[in-house]
Amino acid sequence: MANITIEQVKHVAHLARLALTDEEAEQLTKDLAAIIQYAEQLNELDTENIEPTTHVIDMKNVMRKDEPKEWITQEEALKNAPDHKDGLFRVPAILE
Amino acid sequence: MPLFDHTIKELEEKIHNKEISVQDLVDASFNRIREVDGEIHAFLTLNEENARQKAKELDESEEKSGKLFGMPLGLKDNIVTKGLRTTCASQILDNFHDPLYDATVVQKLQNENGITIGKLNMDEFAMGSTNENSSYTPVRNPWNTDHVPGGSSGGSAAAVAAGEVLFSLGSDTGGSIRQPAAFCGVVGMKPTYGRVSRFGLVAFASSLDQIGPITRTVEDNARVLEVISGLDPMDATSVNLDVPKFTDALTGDVKGLKIGVPKEYLGEGVDPEVKESVMQALKVYESLGATWEEVSIPHAKYAVAAYYLLSSSEASANLARFDGVRYGVRTKNADNMIDMFKKSRSEGFGEEVKRRIMLGTFALSSGYYDAYYKKAQKVRTLIKNDFEKIFENYDVIIGPTTPTTAYKVGEKINDPLLMYVNDITTIPVNLAGAPAITVPCGFSENGLPIGLQIIGKHFDESTVYRTAHAFEQATDYHTKRPQLGGANK
Image (cartoon, rainbow over all chains, first blue to last red; front, side, top):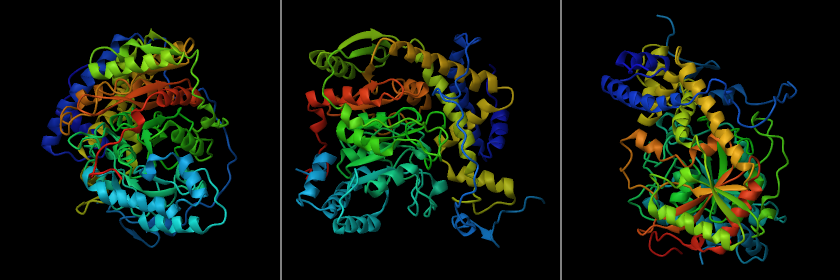
């Protein structure tokens, strides 16, 4: 696998919704390269015919009834919000 | 003798005989916190008013019922508590003073009349092995405050070791209950994946996370797990199995028990003192009529790499919810919404959390998913198979909980990779979904605790407890106490 570039790191930061300073981007480029290089050792293993484990316990989907239930009120849902107005979460402008 | 040197059962009797009141227990807890928490920083938030009120109510009540009646407990701060601040030791949740509900485990503890004393410090979002990733003052090890308590449930382990609470809950994704419990000389259990509901546990890596108890004795641990286990309609990964009475398994009898000892757990990188303590422990088991043989987990060396890909990928998705919209801290200077997301997250998350979100986002990004995430899931299968194969012939697997004793503060923090590799003994167990406990099995020459790890088959916590208890009863390591704040009264 190719080395990690600073451009890649900046792209991934955008995907992850993180704003990095230039120093942070440089440091993360080094850190990720080292970690990914370490992870490359997994390629020593032939896993062609191995099923991936997505759930470690032998269990089938269990369905429950889909019923409405009292949970939280609108007032409660808003009480920890940094900003709200007229019963809604308020955020900065989405469109210019 | 300090009250918290007694087991839950003994304290229950003392309450029943009116030798002590619940208020005495709660006083003991807050007094001890006042006395020593300035040295170890285990608590982030105290629940003093409510705890004292509850103690008074219990003392006045006619019916003294509940498996944890009046017992003071602490909760890792990634376990959500209604109306009680829950921060995950992160600045992004610094203002989260009023959570809307209790985690299922908290409800269960309350149903049995346990008393929540406060919320315990941790590595931010449970990412770390030293507590140095807490965004508040990091926890120090009660046995020697120049050393770390381990992580990520460092506060949960240190608070129990220091006698601030009788027991605590932690969470374990790659060793975060067992490693700090070993470093602090207490008993820590990671139950089988699915045994305990995770509803209300702030998710780190959902295919690995599991809540479990930290206590001073195996008996107390078994009792607390009985309380918190079981199917929960609010957690689709909790399993529909009867919860055994784990305390009934504590017979002291391990005659004929077959123990497998993985050679990978006693090889390179394992401190000679740790190895010696484990070998001594195996002799104890021999003297009790158990037998042991060397076994192998051939894919153990790949566990750390697979774990960091899987856990970071899942974390990058789970931590997307922290966006400064519905709760938590929002940046003060944003021009538009995307900018607000980015700045709130960047200001709110610490360095290690950002590193793992970046690694996870990279591993899941287009073109890399198969090479990293899926590959790691396949390697996980190989590791799970390694364990299953051993368990065809052995009842439990035993080895050290950690390769070394507690690190010095500052010793490891600067090299993430070096830090990750030290989790080699705990991580494979999470990948396999198996239950595992750590019990004290010795001390290093400089007086730091060493932990013995006992791993069991899926949903066979009973055998794990029986094995741990037999060792505990045959030794006296669990009776040793750290010297903090002068006399440990």
